[in-house]
Image (cartoon, rainbow, N blue to C red; front, top):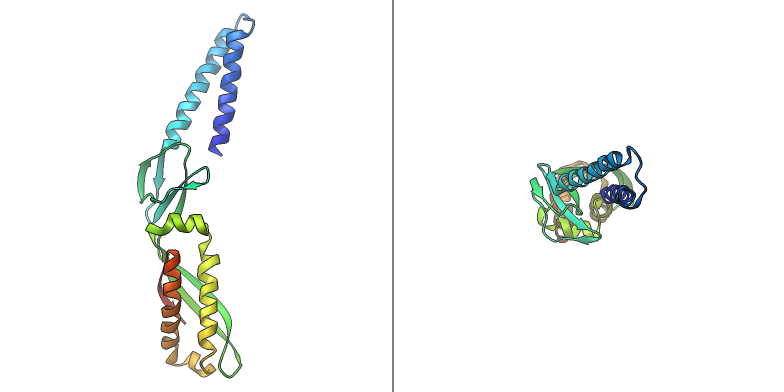
Length: 195
C-alpha cells in the first residue's frame, strides 16, 4: 500500500519536473510548478520518515517482510527504525484461549457433548518461521485441528461417565502431553488444557 502511494507521488513529481524543465513557461506556471515540486519533495520525505519508524506494541513481536523475504530475527516490543520498504507483521505473543464445544466419542460408541478450553501462546523466537510457513492464522490451521484430533482420540478410550467425573483431569493431562510437543515443533506453546 505504502509503495503504491510512493509510486503515485514519484509520478506526480516527475510530471511536474518535466513540465518545469521542458514546458513552455506561462505567467504563473513557474510558481505553481515550484510549489508542486516542493510539495512532492515534502511528501517523499514525510513518507520515508513515517515508514522508517515502526512501533511494535507490548505483548507482540514484529515479523519483517521485504517483498516476500521474511527475516529470521523478530522485532521485540518497542519503537524501531527500519527500512521504509519493509512490511512489519505484528503477531501476538500473549496468552490466548481457544474455547470449543464439540462432540467426542466414548469407548461405548456414544457421542458425548463436551466443552473444552486450551491456553496457548506464540513463542516469540519462532514467530518469523511460523509466519513464513503457516501465516498469521496459525490458531485455525494448527491449534484447533490438533486439539480436536487428540481429544477425540483420547476420549474414545474412556467411558462416557469418565468425561464428567474426576477422570477429566487425567484426560486433560493426556491431551496436553500429546498436543504440547507437536505444537512446540511449530513454535506454539500450549500452557494448559481444560475440560
